[in-house]
Length: 155
Ligand SMILES: [Zn+2]
Ligand SMILES: [Zn+2]
Image 1 (tube, rainbow, N blue to C red):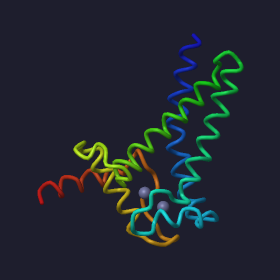
Image 2: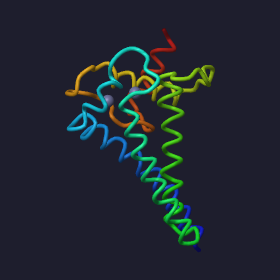
Image 3: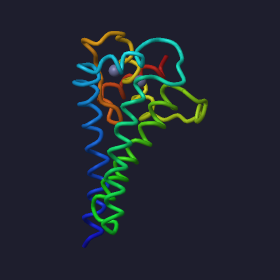
C-alpha cells in the first residue's frame, strides 16, 4: 500500500514541478525577480548565469524534502524530494543541454517531442524583455508547436 502512495508522491511532485516552473517563470522570473532571469534572455554564451540561482533554489527545496524523508525512515517526503530532483535533472538536460547547448552532449538526439519543446522555448527567447512573453511552460509544449515541427520538416 505504501508503494502506491510513494509512487504517487514521486510522480505528483514531478508533474507539480512543471506547474511550479511555469508559474515561477511567468509571474516571478518575468516579474519581481526579472533581474535574476534577465541574463538568460541576453544573447551570447555564458557558462554561468544569474538565472542559475533559480536552479539552486529548487535544488535546496528538493534536498530539504529528501533529507528529512531519510531522517524519517524514507517516508513520503523522501519521494517528493527525489520527484523534485528528477524534474530538476530533466529540466537541466533538456533546457540547458539540449535546447541551449551549454555543453555539447546529445547533439544527435532528435524526435518530434523534443523539437516541439525546442521551438516553444526558442519562441519564448525571441522576446528579449520582461513583458509580453509567450510559452513559459517547459516539458509540456503547447500542441501548436507540434504542428510547427511538421512545417519545419516540409521545409
Ligand atoms: Zn524567460
Ligand atoms: Zn532558456
